[in-house]
Amino acid sequence: MTGLVIAVDGPAAAGKGTLARRLAAELGLPYLDTGLLYRATGRRVLDAGADPQDPEAATAAARALTPADLQRADLRGPEADRASSAVAAIPAVRAALLEWQREFGRRHGAVLDGRDIGTVVFPEAPVKLFVTASTAARAERRWRELLGRGVAAELPVVAAEMAARDAQDSARAVAPLRPAEDALVLDTTALDAEAAFAAALALVRRKLR
Ligand code: DC
Image (tube, protein in one colour):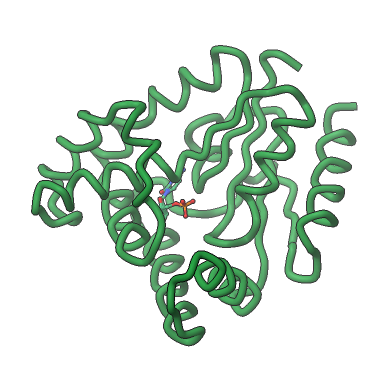
């Protein structure tokens, strides 16, 4: 499968990360969670005491990213969510991260998950999945994930924050979240992780046949 690029896009907590990682393992491809690039950029801006909406600070942070930034332990949680979505709306930040993602995919092929992989980063990818689920299902999953990590959280607050982030990711002028025209849509509302993976693998195999 060397050289194959699979794009996995979708809103927050739709299950695309777990699914993309498993697809990569199954197909023997490298995996890149592109959300980490935006999360690490947001973290660097916060570390500098700057505002994630400030284009200059955010662009400088994106350009200064190192692989070690992606290993940080503080890339998840509400503060990192907000900062990542804010920096991701800045065109120069996206431009700074674009070539990095393309090089990663071109080297040996890859499964990449994000928001704009099928529309912008790899519009020519032969397989594109758009993984989605109802807002209620996604909010509950994120809430359970937070509780599992020992983070106290209220479901209505998690749901409201997720809706705000989806709105910002979908409404931004540059590379908004939307399915590519040739994406296969997978709705995981009624599927557990195992069933979602089986369905995704079946879609990928059919597409590659
Ligand atoms: O997938 P994630 O929740 O870790 O992504 C964090 C934020 O980064 C998300 O709110 C939008 C942004 N993002 C993006 O704009 N483009 C991508 N390819 C991946 C993430």
